[in-house]
Length: 570
Length: 66
Image (cartoon, rainbow over all chains, first blue to last red; front, side, top):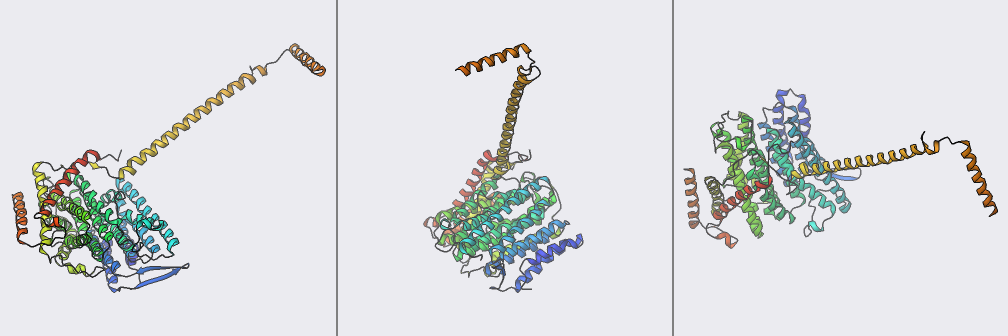
């Protein structure tokens, strides 16, 4: 059992699912993560499987603490999402979800870059079906854009690997930028790999596939999607680029810009995507600082983030499932109909906002301590603003506009039992980790010498930051300054490839067509003129086709003779 | 009602700071009420700037469908 590559159970299991009767498939999908997690418990640190293919030594499986912590949380998330999707009777979604999870787990246990690349591409190919399964024109188009970008990231990764292999002669996936080096001195291979990871991690300006595609996914598909793709990228960065200074700046920008978009976004699942982007920023900062404390912070953040983000996506999915809409402008007052969902959502919101005793706090505190330890003053200030931003969009906006605020008049049923169960377990985990952080700290790659609750002052300042932010929200509402939710969309960088690029290409093809038309017209005119003159000279009425009288011919011959006579004498 | 409760809670949190010893690394971070004021300003600023952003990037819902 331990020689089987982790994740393979889900990939193969996913392929077997279609054979089962449709009513059993969802239950099968629930069993697979349990089996996978059991297998993981048999694995021990330091284990690896190496093979040699065509003279290249590969390491398809490598087990260490970094892989294991991601493996555990991926399986937990897969189980919760599968439980949430228990009502789904769509073979495509179950198969895609299981193979997607399996390949993401395979990727975090991949010891060499080629294996990583293979799993990297399978996650892209399988996850797109969770978007297409919505079976709408919009979902189809968004899925296509998602696929192009994800596969593009894979292609960059592969070319980077080839360059890197050429430079270093190694295919091992380990730290790609050594201590004392930086991105500036790195070769093109490392750059390409960095870019590939950056796309999947939704770096600023490379981010918009996330907000474009995830809100178009199915209700349950979005829960799966929120957990794996971007966190696989976080894992890859933590493995390949710890301590890469550039990541600090990139991370801070990532925590900041999405919060402005989240304020004015109407689609609440899209708000969660901007929030996801912002959270990734915290992790990227941690990886960029690169100390043991900071890396622990980034990984702990990824762990708890998967849980509370899945919880928030589940609660918004339940709202969409019951009401048929996820527009903030059409929702409100749902706590009457869906009290349990509302309560679970609030737990997720408090976790992501990092209230003390909730999971976000015990993870984020590690990163913040590392930031303070390294005296990154501007980074610290930026992250404080971002924390208030998280409080705004995920802490308040999501629960407030869905469950409270203006009563939309919608009366519906509470979410189905299995959805409530999935949300409930996630909520318990969020609070459990928040109250007993040592459970989480024990899983982290480096020993943790940190007590989030040792200094009460720290909890106090966090409460101050968050509650005063909440107070600002309340004041804005009372003053009528809070922007009302509107049925509208907001442009982001997707405008460049959804509007600008097609327009440019359109105008170029239009112009080309014009040029061709003009060229054809000119050629035709020239041809016609030529033909006309040919006809004039050689046509039936032409000068050269005229029948001349014999007399004139004799005259001309006489002229010719005379001319030759003259020439002869000269 | 909820607003007053929140306000009272906020005031309590600042008062607590006088009693509780807290550790600070940067000097400005130790100022009384720094986190409270910074939290308030941050959210206020984010919302106001976000609102202005709408002027430039807001479009009709079917903008991309045409």
